[in-house]
Image 1 (cartoon, rainbow, N blue to C red):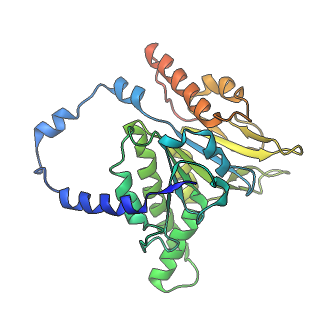
Image 2 (image 1 turned 180 degrees about the horizontal axis):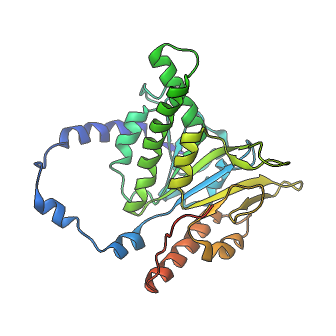
Length: 287
């Protein structure tokens, strides 16, 4: 069963608050020590992957294909039974995003944890799901303002808040941590059959699409076999900043017990080859 790290989060938040401000402001030595060659930064970076699909297709179950001892599962869904028996670490966000208890933490405390974790602790951080996080941020805005429905301008407030939180997750990649952002799916009304997209409001959807390097759409076939489409296709919102390795990713067996880990390893290898050849590994994203 996934191990909850709620107690550890509370301890880290307290430690971080005590240590904050120890280094004096305006210290040029600290800035100079942080200077690193760009290629080394990019080569050591993790990857931010987005996966979306309908409820029940197995998005959460994909976490089992990552190394349990190096994975942190951040749960907005309220404690999924899908991962019962899995040996990784989990962190449940409070339903109101505000109240920290012995079973769940506030979003503020979660953000404080993200500011402290390093790749030697967790190589993979999974957020499940962005869609529910957005809904809860909207609910928190309504509760704070004593309203029943969001006004048009408040959707903008919600989008900005979600963008800030998603960026905190995505920025983990610069510490060598891989980030997997899971979202539900919806279909737009464009075209005869519609287009499958992540279930997010416009502002949040834009942030989500911008922050992920690879976006895949997950479905389940008639034979109950799951399928993830990473390459761009008609009727599917997919994206990659690593088009040159899409065929390698698509070739990973979908039933592999190390599926996501293998996908990420192939992206790392492709990116390393690009850097070695002097090619920008992350050109402008193409949808």
